[in-house]
Length: 293
Length: 301
View 1: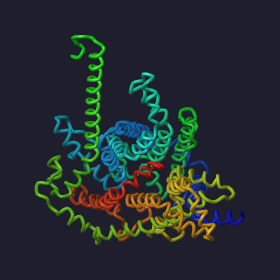
View 2 (view 1 turned 45 degrees about the vertical axis):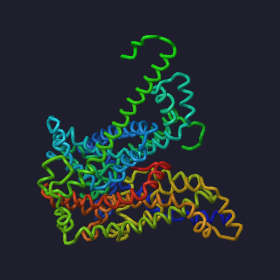
View 3 (view 1 turned 90 degrees about the horizontal axis):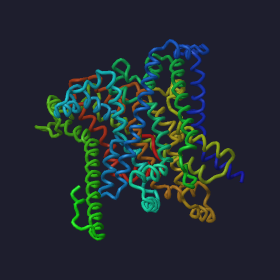
View 4 (view 1 turned 30 degrees about the vertical axis):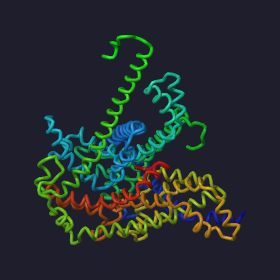
C-alpha cells in the first residue's frame, strides 16, 4: 500500500513540480508584487495599497479599459453561445451532410486564434476592405469600422463569434445524447416544437451551457491577439482591453508592480463571476440523475 | 390558405389534407434549415476562400473587387513575402515554429500521460485536493501568473530562448490535457492491466505496453490540440523571444505587417495562407480526433 502511494506520487511528480514552480509561487508572487513598485532593475519597493488606490481613483485609462473589457465580454459571450446553440439545434435534425456542415463550421475555430486570421480581419474591415465592398455593392453606405470607437470593438466581437464552432460541437454532442423518448412523450402531450425546445431540450442542455459559459467567459476576459493586431487598442482606447493594458504596463514600461495590481483586479473579477456562475448553477443547471458534471 | 376550401369535409379527406399540409410544412422547414446552414456556411468560409484567392492577386487587384478569383494569378506575393524584410526567409520562421512545437508536444504527451495515470489508477493521500487543483489551474487565468513567470525565467537566464515555452508544458502545465486524459482513462476497463500485473509486469511496463496503446486516440487528440495551439500562440513568443532569428511564424507575420503596412497586402496575405496551411492540413487529416476531443471534454477556444 505504501509502495502504491509512493508510486502514485512518482507519476504525479511532473505535475507537482510544475504546479509549485509555475503556478502556485507565481500566483502568490504576483499578489505580493501588486503591493510594490518594481521596475526589474532594483528590488521591489513595498508601497502598500497605493497601486490599487491609483487604479481606482486616479487612473482614467483603467476606467476606460475596464468598461471596454466588460462591454466586450458581456456582448461576445452571450452572442457566441446563442449562435452556437442555434446552429447546433438546426444541425441536430436529421439532415444530410451533417458532418460536412459540422466540419465547415468548425474550421474557423481551428484558425481563429492565429495571427493570420487577425491580419485577415484587419484587411476585411479596413476602409476599402471586403466587408465595405460587399456593403457598397448592395447600395448601402460603407462603415468606418476602425475609425469609429463604437464600431471597432464590434469587429473583435465578430471575430470571436465567427469561432463559434467549438462551442457548437459541444452543444451538438449534448443534443445528440438526449433520449428520443422524451421528445415522443412531449409530442404525445401535445407540445409543439418551440415548447419542446424550451421545456425539454434546454433544461437538459444546462450542464453544457454552464460549461461553455464559464470557459468562454474566462477566455474572453483574456482576449489579447484580436485587439493587439486588429485595432492596437484604438481608436480612443475603445478596444483597449485589460490584457492589453497589463501587457503594456508590464512588458513595455516594465511597471511590474502596477501591472500585477491590474492583473489581480482582472483576476478578482473573473473569479467572482465564476463563483457566481457556480453558485447560481445549483438553481438552473439540471443534472438528470447522472454524476457527470 | 387555399387548402381550407375543401369540397367535402369527410374525415378521410381531412386526414389527407392534414398529411399533405404536414408534408408541405416539413418541406418548407427543411428548405429554411438548409438555406440557413448554407448561408451561414458561406459567411463562415468565404473570408478564407477569399484569402486564398487574394494571395494570388496583385496588390492593386486586392482592393478592386470582392470576387475571390484572381484575374491573372501571380506568385509575386508568395515570392516577395517569403523573402521578408529581415535577413531571414519565412523558411527560417517555419523552422523555429517547428523547433518550438516538437519538444513541446512530446513533453506534453509524456508528462500528461504520467499524471493522468497517477490520478486514474493510484490511491495516494490528498488525491481529491490535488485533482481539484487540476480544475483550478484549468480555470486560473494565465494573466495572473505571467509577470512572476517572466521574472523567474529572466532570473534563470532563459529569456530569448525556447525554454520558457517548452518547460511548463513538459511539467504537465496544460491542465486541460491532464483533465481530458484522466476522464478518458477512467472510462477504460482495468482488467488488461490487472492481467499484466499478475503476469509480473511492473507499473511502468503496464503504463507503456498496456495503458498507452489504449489511450491512443485520446493521446492523438492531445498532440493535435497542442500542435494547433502552439502554432497559433502569439503572446508567449511575443513576451519571451526577442531576436528575430528565433521568431516563430506568428511573430514573423506580425513583424511583416509592422514593416509593410498598407502597401504590400498581397505579401502579407500570401504569408498568412502559408501560416494557416499546416493547421488546416492537420485538421483535415485528423478531424475525427478534434471533434471527439472537444466533445469529450470541451475546450478553451
